Image 1: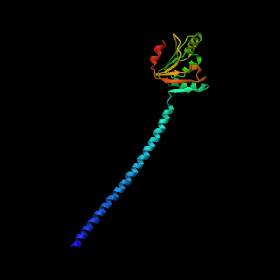
Image 2 (image 1 turned 120 degrees about the vertical axis):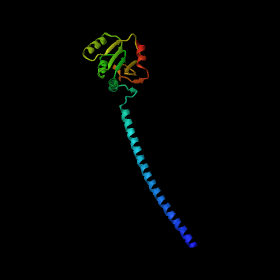
Image 3 (image 1 turned 180 degrees about the vertical axis):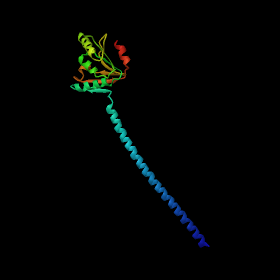
Image 4 (image 1 turned 90 degrees about the vertical axis):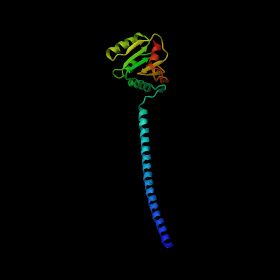
Length: 193
């Protein structure tokens, strides 16, 4: 009897051990599949991160910087920066500059169709004549004589105000800065009239 009992217990242990071993093996297979899925997800996340960085780079490359330090002699860089600002306008451009000449009118002609342009500047017979002749042939640029001198120069592009370190016509001849400031256009315009 003992032998029968011992064989039965041993058989039961062997069967249970085999069943547990099968469950352990099945769990190991599941863990291997989970590890493989985790590796795959990690690779996908890495790819997404790389693509996001590439997309961020492209977006940043197409954004206009909010400030620009233009070294002496970089007339072309200054010209292109200001022209790009002018081209970016969708509704209005307002230039406040005491020293406007025909070169500035040419730059303002680079604006998109339908964008209103206004120039606040000091009165001279020459600039008045330049505006009259320009406006007969090209899209009109409004000329407003400033009642008093304004030291700083501003370019308002839609709802953004840019402080210009020098007159637009002289940009790049000497070290100058262009900075986007946090003022509302109305604040600047209210103070010059």
